[in-house]
Length: 260
Length: 283
Image (cartoon, rainbow over all chains, first blue to last red; front, side):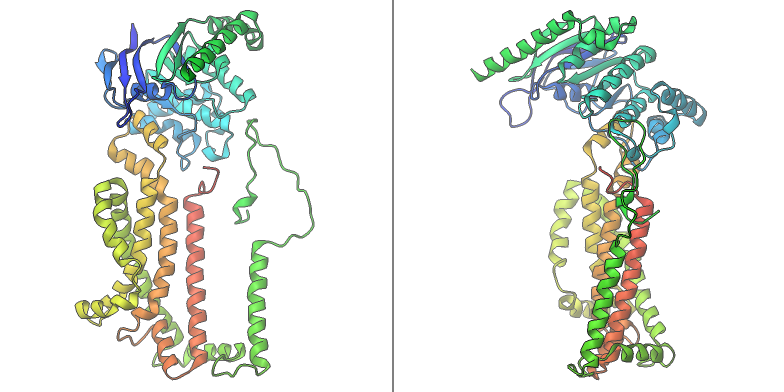
């Protein structure tokens, strides 16, 4: 059963003629990792904003477990590209923040926080301040914070976009591990084609003017990684490269039609 | 650990552990404090040289040793029926009372202005109307309305401190990261929790900066405030001395105000570093 259901969603910002999103339909199940790939201006951030409940749809609707999404909610936790952590709290307290807001009792909270910190490999730095950490570690804190709250879906807004290539690849592998163990649906937006292909169980390619879905595919590289294949072997596989080039080609073609 | 924020070891972005930075050069390097000491020492030396050479008469600029002698004299003997510590205490009481009132009024009101645009539209003209006015300009009105008692003196200083505290708080609250607020909402924060756990701590560095600037503005109003029928206070002491051309007391008063104001400023800087150590750290 799908957790998040998006039907013919359209968003037009006030004072703009062209819609930011046009006729977007999607569904996300608990065991899926849905990636929206596209260049800047394709509406993927708007889409994430609507799913999170920050932006109201102009047309269509978004349902979570059958109920319309009208506001931010604990079942849909967001992780941003630039960490939105609280620098006056240490790593442990940042991860515990959601549970504290929700009024979870201390015992449950400590158990969940300890488990989550271990899952993302941060148990050793629980007492550190977030501004003492590297960019990659801060993103892990952001993911841990979203996991520790009572979320059922993680909405990731270019979570690795500000990281260097080496750290980004480590974080992609970490995300797959977390996604598999935590039993949550993940919706991720990115403009990195390799990242999208590697992570997605379902991938939608988006294009600007107006923002819409132009292509859907179900890559299998995520499964191959989980079956034990090496990440570099996957990313240098001819099949991976062919798909990457085909997506690049689609993006360029869309760009040309745009210009024409 | 040194108080300079530049000595914190930077954590490399790509690696998860910090690599120790080797000390590059063991030779003695002058620090900010050394340059400051050099600057003050030069000023004192110039002062001494000008007066000792006889270029400037003591009436216009008394020599440092005369001011120092006056300091000893005023500690016990006093000037205008009060010793220097008594003058200082009177001024300090007014300053701290005004500061307390400005913080109690300014921070909550600043939060309201920062959170509600309507409050900003309504109050902004009032604040911007009185803020640039010289305190001496509205001093007569305050005397007419509130008399010549202690309340008027404190009120004048309070008004000077209030504006920077209010503006800094409102700006600090309004510029708290949107992402941080959205992330907190998606973790289940109510409006009150958002204010309490995200907006207020996020605005704290700016609020403290506002208090620092406000305190400076308060000191600069002290002399005007003590024009109002005061019998004690550093501002009063300076004015009375000026009327009788007792220049050494004027200079002494100025130095005492500067030293006390600087000590309070240093205290607030320490408080800021303690309360908001993340401030100035990359984001």
